[in-house]
Length: 261
Length: 251
Image (cartoon, rainbow over all chains, first blue to last red; front, side):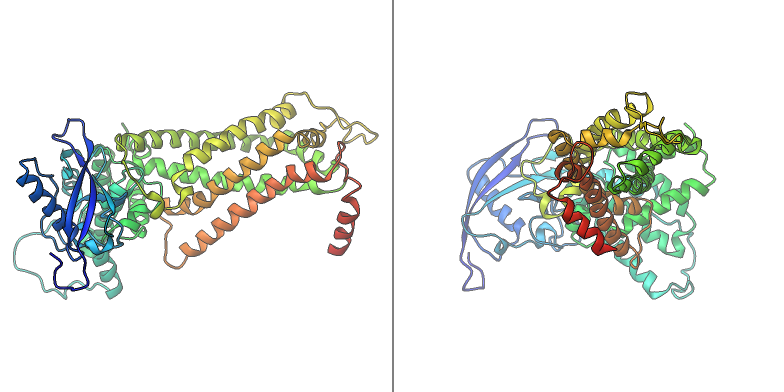
């Protein structure tokens, strides 16, 4: 199974995997051995090999979240050797390749751990809290009708670029997983600053930040203490500057909106 | 719940109070440090005692003192509330967590550093502030009608700073303060939304400098008295010529 690279030698690995049969059940680390793993495999393909082995043995395969396997969907939420998405910077788990590990390594694989991300099973977590935060305000309302001309609303290039940078958030939750406080502020700030930078977002600007922060608090995420591990682990490089923009937007909205509730 | 209480009980609202009180306490550190530098004046404590008498009796200072109490109170209260919230946000810890690979130690341990500073603060207040305010200190005495009834806080400082464990506590506390400020100063600006590509590197650099200078200067005070002075605050004969020539050189 060495793949196309003649120098790639297959590896044998020890995996310490978090197994938890159901949301309320007590979980524990279970040790597995996987053999003949190609360095060219992605991390998820390596888990596929493990699951095939388990199925052949008649055991329950390890549940883990995955979908596109090309770094776009943000599904593959694994905490690998104490890091969100593993040791490589700026990648999701599906983009992490086994060549980052060595033969004989022991790899610990855990789910995202946050009260707001309850575990479905094993390594799979429920991230619908993020959906509810977006539903609270992470949108712009657009009237139906003829599509306006794209150039009708002038937006300076550097503003468009910054908004785009914020918009690249894939909602994977690596920020929450890495944060000591399980805070979701990098995620919330990415959407708030993306829309605050653009004229289309201006209409709902104040209610958006008020409602999204309120929902974030209701979901039980922690509060940011500017540690910075979120931005360091973010696979798409959302910066801490966005959290400052979120704080600024929140303070301005609270001080000037007409919302007395 | 009104919009005001809602704002300040939200996660960001609490952070904003943390940052405002924290930066306010930084200004207090500057004033406290500048005043205390008079301990290094070789005048047997006269300037320091006049200064401390002023600080203890001036009505404006006494009013601001209540602001300081509130500043500390809210900073500690919000820290507790935020810590409680943050601990509840992750009830089950990771089996393996290499947070040292993605963040600084100081930023993850502000609670521990703050608690150490609080312990120090209680001892410090009891030893100097409490005795100065509620009696227990000797008077300066002497012939000067103006100052002879002033408390001799200087001698209280000198005698305290000849107790080895007291000096150790002070120096250790200044390490805690330094690390606390190392993260806290820049963090305060970030929380207020004051982040800009042009100015944030400068704010951070000033914060690091502030942390080192303030903690080192405060730590120098007990070390100076412990190492270089006798029981009356006079330079010991071993270092006196050295300091004397240093003073001359600086002049």
